[in-house]
Image: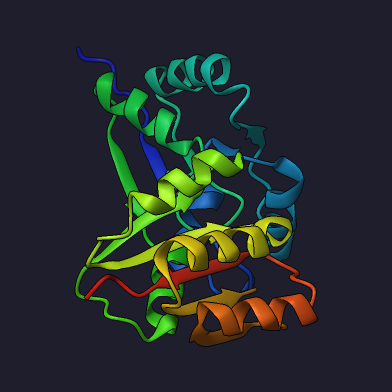
Length: 227
């Protein structure tokens, strides 16, 4: 008799507004044995909002190797586990990718409960071409490396989507202006939240705006391709 393994459910959660969750995501989070999340405190806000009592465990960048082995063992013992990130779809710009790979390599069934994704939300809101795009995640923190990453994108014809944090936004915009020129850009802030804002302008105008208005919240940036 073959031993039945558990299943890994990759569950998309809201990127801001807690109402942006699917019925299927709620049902899955209620029925699995364990929820693996980046930050248990963050996820518990969502769980308490929907009266979900499933236990949680932290799974983040600095414990992913040790915790990955632990989660794999539970899956092999037949436990179903849900993987969530702090927001949006797990496995994109977060350590969830590693447990997904680990499960696949060990023949554990993996399925996805699709839902919110900041990349897609930002791309669609930008009003830029969506038929072909490239996602670069967060650019490097070190100025020299960040500039090299931008230089590598100069001839990219597709719409370029990146994430940026408030304290680095202006530096990144100045690097884009300096290296790529004064292109069309769209900057989406706090998408789905109360203070959602979309700026669609030239890079130079966006720099003026965020010099006058201190950047707050998380940003999705779309840069027009080189056409």
